[in-house]
Image (cartoon, rainbow, N blue to C red; front, side, top):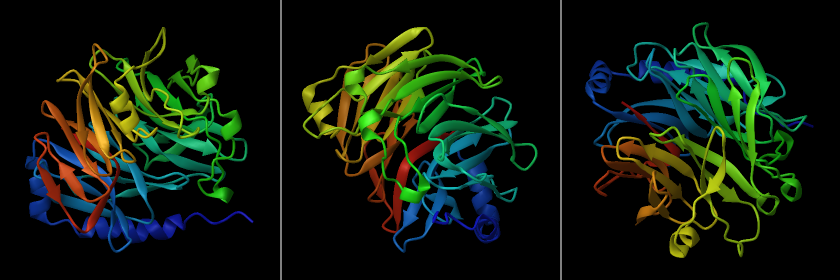
Length: 365
C-alpha cells in the first residue's frame, strides 16, 4: 500500500495562519530596512520544522512553520516573495512574503508527483518552475505554476532525465539548466535509491517556454554513479555544479564541474587534500558574481572551499562542522550549519542553540 505523504489542506490552515499572525509590525519594518536578508529552512530542537528570514547580524526576523523538512528557497524579486520547497519526496511548497504583508500560499503537488526541493521564478515573476518526480514512470518533470493565480498548476514538461534536483534560469531569461541526478526513487520506498547500478546523471539545458531540450550533457560512463545535484551561475554565465558520489568510498572522483551551452562538461581538478576533505559529497554551490568566486560545501566533510571562477583554482578552504548552506555576502560567503551556527564573511560565528539550519541559504538583496 502506498504510504500517505501529508494532509496538505490541514497544513495550509495551520502553518500559513501561524506565520502571518506571528509577524509584528517592527519585524516587518526591520525586514524592509535591511540591505540584505537570507532565507533558509530549519529544524528546531523540539522536532518541528520551518523556514526563516535572517538578518545580516544572524537575527531571525520571521519564521514560518512547515509540516516536515524543507530544502531550498526561491525568490521572486518582482513581488518580493519567497517559496520554500519540501525536501524530497515532499508534496508541499509554501510561498510567503518576507515583509509580512501578504498571507502565505501553499502549493500542493498533484497526484503521482512529488517535489525535489528546488524551483525558480520566471524573470517577470509570473511563473514558478519546480523540479518534480513522475515516480511511477521514473521520469523527471518540471511543474509550471501561475504565480499570479494563487500558484495554480498550468502543466509540466520533462527534464529529459531521472531524479532532477536543482534548476536555474540562465541570463537569457528562457533557458533552464537542470541537474538530473540520475537516481530513481519512489515514495513507497522513502528515500531509497533504486537504480545505483544503472544511474545516468546529466546536466541539461531546456527552453522554459516550449519545454524543448536544447542540449544534454552526460558524464563519462565510468562516472555514472556521480550524481549531479546542485548548481549556481557565475558572472560569465557559466553553470557550476556539485556532485555526490554513490560508488565505493575508496573511489575519489572529482566532484565539482562547470558547463555552458555549446561546451562540454568540465570537471575541475583540485588538490588531493581538498578533494578528499569533501568525502565524496557536495551539499551546495553558491557563486559570488561580484567577487568572481564560487563556493561549494560538504557537511559530511565539515568543510567548504572557494574557487576562482575564471581559472577554476581553489583559493581558500575552511573547516566548519556540518556546513552546508552557502550564500554570497560582500566579497566572500555566509555559511550555515547543521549545528545551528551562522558564519559571516569574516568567519565570526553566531550560534542559535534551538535551530538546526538545513541544506541551503538564499541571499535576498
